[in-house]
Length: 223
Ligand code: ZN
Image 1 (tube, rainbow, N blue to C red):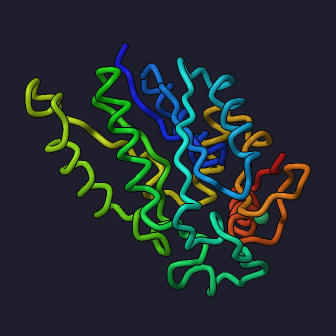
Image 2 (image 1 turned 135 degrees about the vertical axis):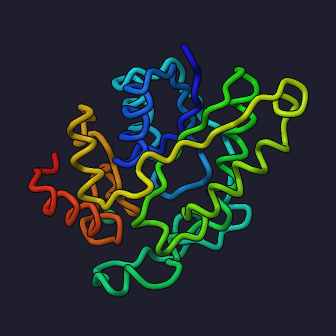
């Protein structure tokens, strides 16, 4: 069975990517990060989802991005709440973590080369790339080119690394439908940027707003 590294955050999108890669027939090695994020609950959920969705392995890499801060997710900066759709749709939000996907994909590349895999999957999508530069298709294509220059597997063995982005063209409603079709336990995923101390969603951040609208547009119930 071909192996793939799947970036898994504990959110709806990455859980859906894991389920999709399993359906594609990959043995999935899930990779999460303890990067100093304000919400540790996502790592608990990631471990749970890796297990329930049939990952063969789940690793958590420790990389503390609080050394730099610069984001509402890694520094003492308030997470924006109650923003309307046009505010969410414009500009790079303060929840952007500097260079996060470049860092995450670099770790995924090292993991993939170590286990002899040429496939990495990440849950970037059309909603995110309006605001996050490292979710754009151009970024993913450029990283794939870099990956194929970066490793001994590529230069010595001719391995061709592919980055899978099955959600790239989907709206949030499209992702919700796909998740349900693939049997993702959506109630166990956490999208919120600022969960309550008990680990529940705040209901008011951009991620909660987008998720709520996605479920509504998909005609589905969250939870
Ligand atoms: Zn929230």
